[in-house]
Amino acid sequence: MQERLQKLLAQAGYGSRRACEVFITEGRVRVNGKVAALGQKADPAVDKIAVDGKPLAKKESLTYIALYKPRNVLSAAEGQDDRRVVRDLIPLEGHLYPVGRLDYDSEGLILMTNDGELTNKLTHPRYGHEKEYRVLVARRPDEEQLGAWRRGVVLTDGSKTAPADVRFLSASGKGAWIQVIMGEGKKRQIREVGKLLGLPVVRIIRMRIGTLKLGNLKPRQWRYLTEEEVRELKGGKTPKIEQKARTKRPK
Image (cartoon, rainbow, N blue to C red):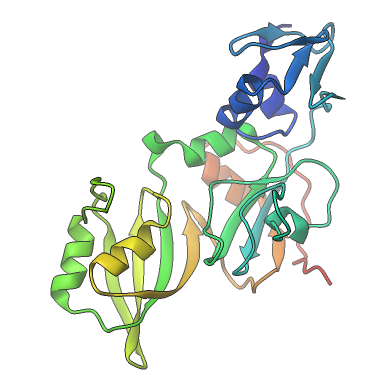
């Protein structure tokens, strides 16, 4: 049965459909020896499909992993320089890629999976899944600063951030920990908003993505999601996945 190439690549674990569309537009996908075009369909039972010169991988069993990304690790499946990437922290075979991004100098929860459909649902702007952060700022915020953050701030590129739930948590020396919950995620948004409001950001820890929580994971630790957690993220029926309860930490 013929399917669109981006769907076939996503099912084989190469990323979300949008990420797989980029593979096609970059000329990295071939069908029966010819460079594929966006929107093209193929039947993996009949056609020879290759990505970067390698045959299309067979559809993998779905894997879902919660990882505590430490600071100074890239949110990427493959590195483009000598910096470590989150994929390096999970010693498993097969395709795994991060859902969304977390800045190089930020830390906390990252979802690693090969489920392209879930990736699309969690990253597409129209779904507006909440993300929760604990943020350490260098100065103690006043109510005016917190109020401005809640209402939305005009960034240096002229765009305005959407309203957010921002709360003072506790003092920390001359600074403070605050909680930021938002449904969008522009690049380095929290750091830029803090800077514009006179609240330099020292540390960012992502605590939650949608219904998935960081829990007791420590930096570099990871664990498989439970079927209930996957079901909650999908908002529907959970596919059968391999269950392993142990928390993993690479040596």
